[in-house]
Length: 379
Image (cartoon, rainbow, N blue to C red; front, side):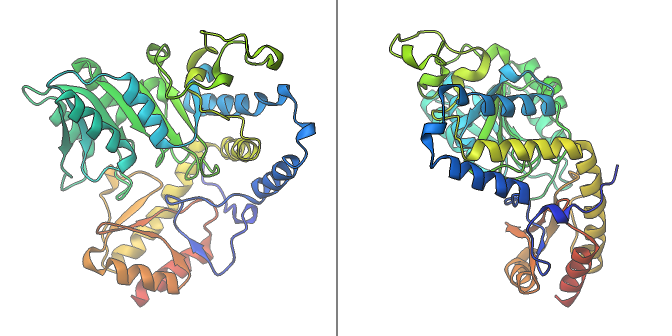
């Protein structure tokens, strides 16, 4: 279903055409109000009680579980993607002489950890080069099926952060299981903008930054941990993740056991009384719209933007390999000048390599589309 513009829910000036949701989404007006209330409440700590430390975190888990078809017990609350990938790195072993598979120009949060771990294990990072047609799925499957291929870990996104090109993670996951390789995903550039069934994909770890398509605040993320990995070691020893931590009077009765499921991997101070309510409201709003409806709407918007760009001489990733919500336009050496000209016209996008990354959301309306067209034609 195509949704009408939701611009009225955001505090976006009329002279701003914001096509940069892949960089950061603005908080809704409701989220800004909730944040102000939450900050004010932190000025009254005598009104914060032990029983207040868990309910909002539980709401985040429940929303995430519903959105991605997993259990709330499978969700850990963390501060960043790098924290989640480091957790995966602590628990997944790179066998001697084995490798880690990634794709070219992948976002670094899902690279650096594996570079260090592979080096320590005597393995290597194997990078799948960018296919000319951006059919990443076929290229990855070919690399995994290569004679003599030895991979302990496959670390990928669902959508390439520069081009918007899509990877079929269900097919990749099946290939990983056949090889006995663990699958670690950074879903920050897809979760919330397109349907993602984690139960069907079945990764070992999947990390979700919320400040982009999940409409959350910066510095609050969550992580899916497969049941087969939930007896692993957390990155830090968070007292709130231990059994019976609800009993503040008994905290010095130190516990070896953890809270159930993925909660052992929660960050310290997970309750975050300011950011957590903002995150909950963003997830609630997404579910009210429906992620499938969001994807349909953004695909329709991007189709129109792509047609405008093509008329101006800028081509995109082929339709069949493109995600619904991100549009990567080849701009080559003209990128920096083009980006500056668009900004002068009130159009905000991102330059990633030789691609102009256009990433609209539901605040875009016909006026924004017209502004984009005029700005592109003037260039």
